[in-house]
Image (cartoon, rainbow, N blue to C red; front, top):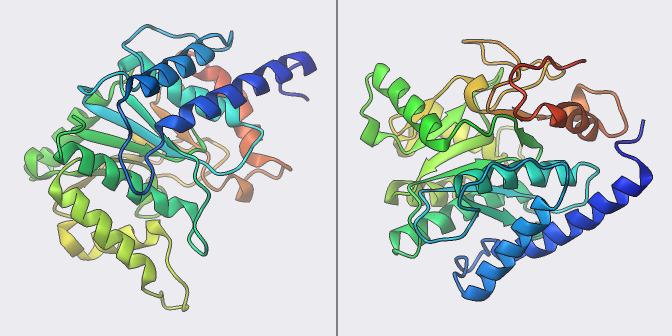
Length: 313
């Protein structure tokens, strides 16, 4: 079944192209921080207007994404190729950032030779942290989420998510001011599809050490993934990663749908309406369709901000 009528698909594809072209100006490049020129502000406003013009988006006010230097949070994501679900992936994140006035930062750069794109997460987090420490930005925390996610409850603020996480850390005997990293597991100890970092010197140093871990071969002689490196860091408390982090329940920030049965052993429940985010990690291994992630995006996108709805499988 087609996602939309032929005419509607064409309109949405046009909007997506415009969104990507305009938002690309707000990318964190590897050698610099985002400009705050009036020209960029105009481009960002144009991107917001394009998204708002889509009949599929229901916005709720807010100050707009990336409009000022005083925002406390940034939301980050990345992609390098065209997908059937681009419109849904982009609009979900952009809608959330605009609603609460968070900066929405994207990376569309192609991956470097021999280095998977997911390693650019570290560079984006490092750049945001550098900009904040230099006084060019005011981010206290940054949320990095994978592209194959949907923010499904835009009423949950990052203030609430961070505060809930810090309270969990305190229950575990940690001091809230010591926590610079918020992560989740899945059915394995760590899934880096959604992470929150405090913009501190410790975080900046961790990004450097984490990046260096890419060059250390695993027991099979292969370079590890970014997830593998951080998992091993936390397990051994390398660079104080266990001391400086809290691992919250998966469903609070990184829920998997019923189709992807890999849940946090502490509270093994799938995504439900009203949860913050749904992540279609490894959809190819669980959904036997030509476009597994696209199928799941199409299935779950209509339930954004529909807390009382039941997903039909």
